[in-house]
Length: 270
Image (cartoon, rainbow, N blue to C red; front, side, top):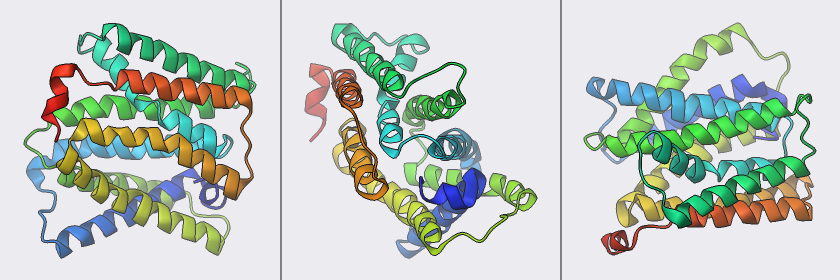
């Protein structure tokens, strides 16, 4: 995203990403003879396309123009924290001491990251940060929504959401044509984002959910900051100070506590 957004801009980068992902996932479903999205699943697809695909991806793309890739990866990992907070406030699910402590620790870690980045309420950088946090909030909220869709196959909902996002983006791309020809590197990044980081990632993730359950599959969250920071250091020459590393460790530990399963639920996962 950091490389592609500089050439394409947020709208074109996201539009091409969701279109490539929708085409790739459709081809996969046809090749494996899986069902395609049906009209009766239109509302889950619309909600998924808006609040799980389109808006978060636009927020990440907007934030990627100014924020470090490592910081974006760490903020992305806060989705379980927001999910637990939403469940406690709106769904009235009890947190317990350990999960409450995890929430507090995780959000303190976010505060440390913001402070280390030189946060200034009057600075323009607050808006990219707010956009990235909004994306994580939506991920946390949609996690609860998807749990309620017991009669809709997750792959169908994901594919339908990608097509909804693609259709919504088309008029915006037509109204704002590219002003310059993107480089081959930028095109390679967009193709990778659509075909690998979205389409292939959905296939692997839903397969993982089917094999080990949603709760265990969510533990991939712990790997996002690790690899996001690693790629930022290798490819973008980014650095992280001790404060950023401390904040990241606080967030990961907070997520670990928030994501811990009740003892009676542990034996439901093989």
